[in-house]
Structures are given as C-alpha cells and as structure tokens.
Amino acid sequence: MNLSKKKIRLLLALADESDYINSKNLAFNVGVSVRTIKSYIKDINHLIEDFDVRIESKMGKGYKLIAGDSDKLSSLLEHLISGNLNVLSIDSSSQRIDYIIRKLLLSKEAISLDTFLNELFISIHTLHKDMLSVKNRFAFFRIKLNFKEDHFYLSGSEMDFRLCINEYLYHNNNDFMFSEYKSSEDGIIYREILKILNEILEEKKVMIAPYTLENFANHIYIGLERFKKGELIEPKIYENRWKLLNDDSSISLANELSFKIYKKFGIRLNYNEKMYYALHFKCKILNCENVGVDRDKSVECVEAILREIKNNFDLDFSEDTELYQYLVMHIPLMIVRINAHIVMRNPLVVDNLRRYLFATKITHSAARVIKEHYGVDIDVNEFGYLTLYFQVALVKKERDISYNIGLFFTLGRPEQILYLNEIYHHFGGGKYKFIELGNDFMYNNDKYDDIDFLITTDTVKKDFGIHKYVIREDDYISDIRKELESIPYRNFSFDSYFKKDNFIVGMSAQNKEELLNMVFKYLQDHNYLKNKYVSKNSFDSIFLGKGILHLQDTDKLISRTICLFIVLEESIYWNQNSVRIVILTKTKRDTDKDLYLLCNIISNWASENSNIIRLIENNDFDMFIEDLKAEYII
Image: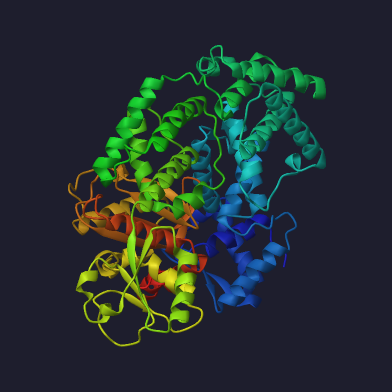
C-alpha cells in the first residue's frame, strides 16, 4: 500500500477519535484544504477495503473510521507506520514529549511544525496536546515555548537552559538519547572535570557530597559546551545573583576551577562564567560558614515552623535540638540555592515522599512558613530534604513509645528458656518491654491490665481480654514481628476512612486544571468544604512516584474526615509527572493520632508495585481494602 504522509496522518487523526470529525477539523489536523480532505478520503477508502476498514461519511456529522474487526484496524495502522522509514519508534505520549523537549533544547534554530508531524507521525491535534505538556515542563524551568509562523522555538536565560539540559539529558531516564551528548569523548571530559573538582576540594579542605559533586561536574561539562558555542551567561540578568556571593570564599574556589580548566582544556572563562560556578560552589559546599543569609531570621523561621507543627499536628519538636540545629543550618543555604536558581538534586526524593507520607504532610506546613518568611516557593528537591529531617524527628518520637509484651509459657523449663532467648534476641532492647507472667496469670489476669500484647504457648481458648499470639510452629519469629508491628493499628477503623463512596474509578480528565475542577466539584457536591466559594487552587500537591499524586489540604478547607482515592481512566501530566492515581487524606483534625497511622497504611500500600497494578487493572474496592490490610493483622 502506498499512502502519502498526509493521508496516513488523516487516518491516524480518525483513529484517535471515537466519534465523527467534521472536514474542517480534519483539514486543520492534516494541514490541507477541505476539498483535499474529501479527495484523500476517496483514495484511502479504495486502498484500505482489503483490511475490512473504511471511512464512513455522514451528512451533518463528518467522518468516522469504521472497522469490522479492531485487530484488523491495528494491523492496518502498524502496516502503514512500519512501512515509513522516517517514523521514530516512539509509542507513548510521554516518550514523544521527552523527544520534543530534547530536540528543542539541542536546536539553535526554530523547528517547523511539519518536522515534528513527519518525525513523530502524529496528527496536529495530538501534537497540540503534547505541546501543552511540553510548554508546562519548560515553564517549570522558567523557559518559554514560542510558536511563530508554524515554527517552535525557546526563549529564556542561559542558566535556566543549562539547568533544563542537565535534567533532560542526564537525569530524566529515557530510551531516546541524542548523539550530541553520548559520545565516548564526553565521558573522558566529564571524568577530567570530576578529577579537577576533587583536587580543588582536597586543596581547600572543603566538602561536597558525592552525588552532588557528580551533578556539579555535569553542570560544568554542559556549561563548557555551551560556552564554546557562544551561549554565554548574560551579565545584566544575573547581577542580583552575583550579590549573593559578596566576598565569599566560593569566588576563590571558582577562580581555581577556572585556572585548572584553562590549563587542561585551553578554555578561558569570563567573569560571569566564573561567578556562575562560584554560585554552584556556594550552594553545594557542606562546611561553608558564610552563607550570606541572616542567621537571626533563620532562627525566627525555624521557631515559627515548630509552632506551626505543634498547632497543626500536636507534635512538640521544641526539645529536639538536633532537628532545630539542622533546620537553622539548612534553611539559609536552601534560600541561597532557590534565589540563585541552583538546584541540588535529590535522587531519592520521590521514593522518600511516598515512603514517609506523614512527614510529607508536616513538610507542607513548614514550606508555607518558609514562604511567609522568605517569599520563595520550595521545589520538590528541597522539599524532599526537609521531609527527611522531619522523618528523623518522627522516628525519635516513635522511640519514646513503648509497649508491654506479656510472655506466658505453659511448657517445660527448657522450652521456655529457648523461646525467651529467641524472642529477646530478635526484639529485645527496643520499644518492646517484655514481662514474664507467672502461673497465676491464668486465674488472676486483672493485675496485668497494662499488657498491650501477649505471646504464649497456651492453646486453651480463654479470652484474656488482650490480643495474643499462640506459638504453634517452629517458624514463629516472622509472625511475631508482624503482630508486634500491628499493635498501633489494633484500634484503627478502616471503615471510618476507606469508604466505597470516596473510591472513584474511571474519572476522565485532560489536564491538571480539569482534574482539579472535578475534585473540587466532588468535595462541594458532597459537602466536604467549609466554604463553597474558596479557590480550587488552594490545595498543595506532591508527586509520590508510581503515577500517584497526593493532594494536601494545607489551608484547612475540608470540614470532615475523608480519604479520597481516584483512579483516572488515563494518565495525565501534572507538572513534569504522569499521574494515574490521586489521593486526598484528611482526618477530622490534623492532631488526630489516626492521621499518622493512615499515612503509614497508604505509604506501605504504595510501596508495592503489585498493589498499584491491581488497583488500576481491577478497579475493585474490596480488593483494594484487602491490599491495604495485607501488611497488618487487624
């Protein structure tokens, strides 16, 4: 079969839609006149009849692709695309978006609309939807996507271009790599840069974390390549950022870097390039004392954060001197990085946010306080670092909680000694206080009312009034561990939070704004909002990885308990991420102790890929509840 690219594009445009499309829309999608569309359809119908596929025309409605068998339609489309050697083997919207971003970043010239249509083999309608996501992704880096005279091009500052290139050509995993940044010579240059950085750190007795150092080497490599091509740091744009340096020692480190680069590569950096690398040094050095930010202001901010956490979650961290000192030291450096537009990548940020959902909620409150004090929004990398500080503080709080575990054995003394040694070996010295119960326990257990859990060999069906585990098999340690970890959840009511009415499947949204409107309307219609006229943009959001988005009611708009789970019909792009599942959790009061348990249950559920796959594939509420409970004995 011999069809032109535009005729194939017409077929693909029809295949993308389940309803009729009028000739004007088709003409726009394909880039031809309405008369030409009618001519194309006549030619195409003659050629595709052997596939039991035809384009149906209906007066007043337009055109629709009709197939006797869906497999035959798929076969036809595969046959058409595979026969075109210029088509890239890109199968999804996310791959197309990454390809478009990378191509635009590496092109000095504007790229025509037809170039993308022909290379990606998609309709104008599909390209338009992809470009909306591309535009949002570039906006995250303060880069503008422009469209003029059927051509796309980018505009923005050089520092932001370098940051974006570093993200999409080095850190955003994808199968489609561009040869410009993949040659063996690149690796040699990168290793030499890394060697130079290590020499400087050793000579000046300063430290940069290993992962951060590798990231810095990437930035230097990109900067040198851009500098050689005449893509320079603009002095007027960055004068305010240079003021962050003052007489900082970071300038001395940048001068040393510049000297070694000239000596090794023969590249002489100008003043603005040196200051650019000085900013990197300032934002990445661990033992840098002169951060150029008022310490008193930092102390004031941290104290406000701790008050906010106490007010919102009834958690008193005021005695945690380690957390206090870490935050006082970390926040000033963080503010410098944000103001300088220097990103310190956090490689485990998404995993940690998903793993520590309650700490993530606390961080939302802290981020609001920081914005009030410094007027800056915290990016996800910095958000992740703060989350870890609060998670460590929570772990220390957990250590203060202890449980009394009763041990009651009815076997002979040798067996008792064996069980006691095994249990003390695996669980002793932590949050569990073990109490060996005497024989009178069987008849007078009232004096043991403070026992939280009982481990016994007694098989008598007597109700002790306490949760118990009876040892019956040799492999009992793993069972006991699971039982002990479930103690805090014994009185947790799943039915109070996970309700079928708030389990929504098949919701269809095209973008972030449409999804927010739907969520907001649901909350309004079901009387969850204190005020029906508040802005739908009042919710904070954080991406938890694995296609999961968590919405946070930081402004306390929701008036009652809700645990909302939404499974979208298809994934949408939310900022830079593909989202399929949306979660919104709220207890009656944030100070409710159940909130911590609720977050842990969701975090544990989300850690298993199989749980997420089962939810998306089955859309079954009862199965979802079973998976939630699987980690706990309730």
